[in-house]
Picture 1 (tube, helix red, strand yellow):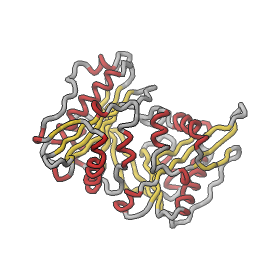
Picture 2: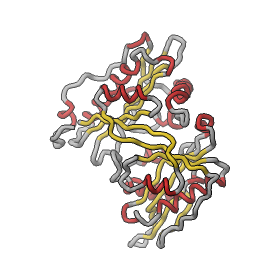
Picture 3: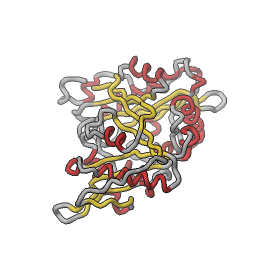
Picture 4: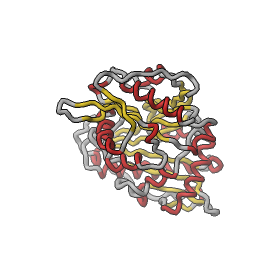
Length: 347
């Protein structure tokens, strides 16, 4: 990263070539369209079977690309189709609107396993990096700029490709699993807090609590109302397995101070070998940390997941999380099952 972050990102990035569709492999390269959704789901399933059998992208996640205002599919996505109409490579570069302290372009992509070793991954990444630089430069901001990517432990070639292209390994993330047949201890909420089930009337207060809780997390920026609605309106969101900690403020108004939100994606279960819920968000606002708020919320989530007939609860955590979350989770019986890494190119 440049030492002088007072300069505009466009100046720090310097001259760069506009993103052009790749031409590698004798394939047809073009942006995604809504008509590609079924083909993308087939592609995702093929990639998941080799790289991360325990999870697969859902239809909701694929469709989100066409519904969020900060994503322009015609400029921010790319896929390669073979002569039989099969998608053999796909990727995106997306720049979320939350940019308080950092501008991020998040690049996600893969090549179908039986088409690897032909240079398609490099061709796709070249396009992604070019598009990501355009996004950072277009922000018009004098903030640090990151191009971020992730790699699964079971796909080491992906991590090597990222590092060869300047995206340095920055963080390890752990996927944890909790066997719900084991006893679940009751964790009482602290005085002044009540734990309530998710309800739509708490949605905006929960979004604000999420943004406040994650302000000191690595690489995190605020979640917009549109992105929040896309998550809570998705078919795999599990309101019956999601819980909130509510407290009354000095102004006499009740507000969310902690959250545990859950999803239930049945498409994951065959690859995992068990039924499960997944917890994408656990957060407590700073002034309520250290009082077992998160523990009380997670204990309710575990009990609800077991009552729903599920076998395990899963979540991901930054191995260097500053709030001590890893210790909390392992103390509640979660165990490390898989790891993945985050890679960053800084400007």
